[in-house]
Length: 178
Image 1: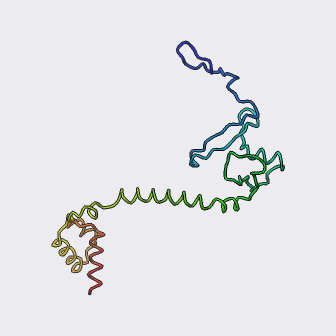
Image 2: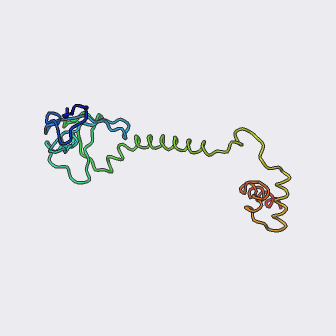
C-alpha cells in the first residue's frame, strides 16, 4: 500500500513498488459495456502498456497481425487463448460471424428504449377512458368558424380549448364526406 501520514491521508509522491505489476503479468478484466465479457490482458511494457493476451499468443506463433484483421476465438470462450483455438479473420467476416448476437442485443435495447419513450409520452385519456376536456358543441363552433372565415387551426384551438391536431383531424374527416 501507499504510505500514509498520521491522519490516514496518502502522502503525495509516494508509491509502493510492490504494487506495480511486472512485465508479463496477466490479468482478467470484465468489460461491463460488453455485457460482462471477460478478456485476458498481459502487461507488455512499462509504465502501463497492456495488450490482449490472444493477440500476443497469435503474434508469438504466426507473426504480426496485418492491419484490418482480428483474432477470433473458435469456441467463443474469450479466456481460452491457446493457439489452436485462435484464428485470424478480417473485420467484415468477424462481424458477419457475430451478427446474430449483435442483432439480438440491439433489438432488445431498441425495444426497451422504445417502450420507455412510448409509455412516458402516451396520452392518459386513451388508457383511462376519461372524456375529453372539450365538448362537441365547441368542436362544431370551431369547425363552422373555420369553414366560414378560414381561420387558422391554431387560433381556433386556443380560442375553444381544443387540441389543434384534433381539430385538424376532425376537419379532414368532414371534408372527406363533402
